Length: 528
Length: 100
Image (tube, rainbow over all chains, first blue to last red; front, side):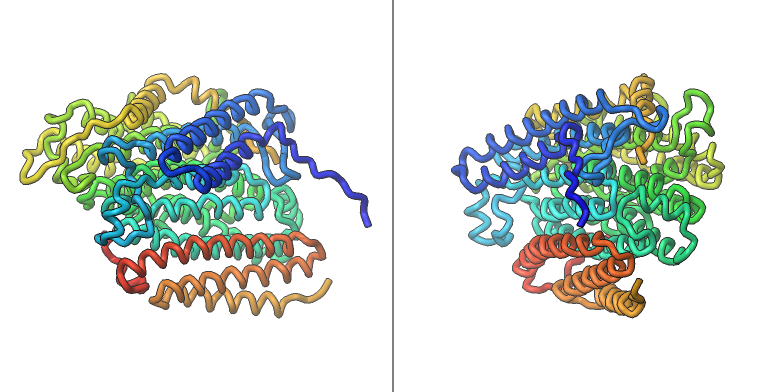
């Protein structure tokens, strides 16, 4: 028997993760023991305090990361080697926590539904029955712990340094989102259907992911990324296991980001889920899953680049084309934003294909990892802001997401329509918005890596997508309203704050992207 | 080192049966059971590879997978139950309001 060695936990570096998880557990206790009337305030305070504490912690952890590997990367392995806290992790954690805070703000909005939140009073009450009418005035406060559990999974996902942690994090982030998708107060049938589709397809894809875990473990004999990397470099036996394993792992990960051919759930879930949830998961899931994709491909399978790059070329090209082309024919604003999210997944994948080593780049140019981090930030600001605006545009039956209802919105509510148009322009990548800088960053790294066919398609897809973004702007400003039109409901300061954050972030990253690009460059590389 | 090939072959067969079941069956509960079969196929492969490599990582992972699968059942059955009570049907073909 070997001697017992104490596992190296490094609590000093991973405590932001524990804070979020602990607050989620406290939220469950609060739900069980507090009287109904006080739950909303307590849950809100808990969630905001927890996220703020974790955000401060992330900054503190990020400031004193130790340099390793001759200055290329900073960080350490915590939780006995299962969690890697390095520059990119800290950057991703910061982003996730900021957008989780905006998510909490949107969840807590109660003025739009005249005094109650956008979630079903009691999810178990059947739509259209006496039970539903009786529970109409109730507030669904379980959503806050669910959000906190999802944030825990999202923070763990890009930090995971072995396959098992990666799988557990994937499930911890997915399961609460499946539930949240089904909790809309209005249009219950659509919401429940979205939850069912998301759940069944998500469970199916995590089955593939897990089989990929098993095969790669069979190849390498270990779950940790470092050991897999070593096996990939040295082992020439059983390469079949490795290749099939990589493919199956990528099925699970590409499903989470909504890449073609695993995009089918995206429009349905984005449309059916409560808009506050859509905003939160559109940003959060993408940030977390791209972090995980980058770490898995660069750290564990970096030496196997020539096997996975052609596959990603094809996926990236298809994703951009399908997203951009299908968005043209949409008549629903939320669905159109979902297809635009698919196209953005393609642009992000273009960045993943870029140059990884700083040595192959000119002075001051960002690497592929850093450009993707930056793009995720620009995309998330615009997306969260856009969905926040969608929650405001309403008619008598709730949110009016049908595009023809938006006709003439620019004249009725110039401020809100202007903010929305600004977000759309950023998604289209017009100069002086964040989207332009982000696209510029990912396209240049992909070009430097010789992926010019992908960049050509990306530019074509950007041009196509300008068309449908501008068309929606035209509807808002120049179309003559016919029939019932939607108008903007005045929100509480919470939603207003989210929109302001979106506008300021998008504008700042477009006009003066330097500081944030430097921050992303400071994040350095993954530790190995 | 033991030869674990038969177990891996069995696990691929189970995995295939599971994924074909997901794609062809219409009842949401049966679809979900097929997913569980896929997860169990993964467990078999993990344990077999653990035996082959002579370390415990795979076996530990199998325990984690069981716990995760149990959590997934809780969430999944809750979602399927609500949709069954609303529509009096658990067929995945009936849930078709959201499309195009």
